[in-house]
Length: 255
Image (cartoon, rainbow, N blue to C red; front, side, top):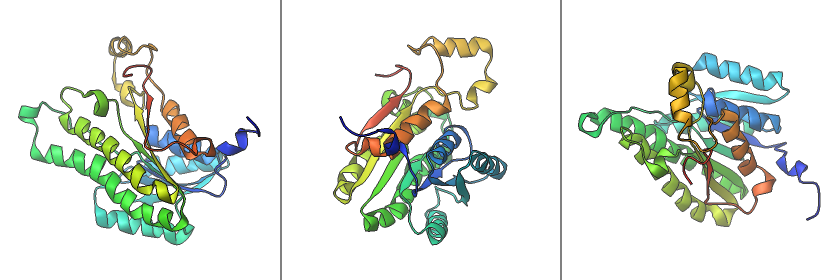
């Protein structure tokens, strides 16, 4: 092994788009990429205050970026939002599809609208954004796409047939896209988080948190940063020969 591996983590000169980048895992990813010196476009839909706070934090840490408000579930909104970003930055080198929602319920009581909302955002949204962004990556013959799935998409969760299906679909989508784009030097991978304390744990009692930890071999919830470091690795020069893979960040919950 030769050379210093640390420069390979640098994203200087790269432009990254993080969907759902204002809170939780998305915010941690935005900060991690900015710390590696990428220019980060923080996408959001309604949480403008959180997005502004994320961008302020990026700049406080010496990074740079912009806000990119658009609805990933609306193809026209995606086209307009990405076109606006490209008008300012000319190219998008990194795409992290993190935007996602849940509308949980038992299948017998699940409404059609709840099924469609989750699929439109979690799966179709990734398709719309990849379709828009891959065009510039193909022209440049370079790019990284990281899609954020979930252990629910691999193992399934009762009461989450819509969410589990959307994340399982995202994994299949990513594997097919990896094969399609590999000849253009565009790498497509999946990060699959387990139980992450991204605001959800704040609503739980101490007893509920402890009950969750019992199911995790590492006996703790993951942090948003745990997921962000995996994403950063896949965006960096240290992963040049990795594509079509699912990187699990779940503390051993699903192996």
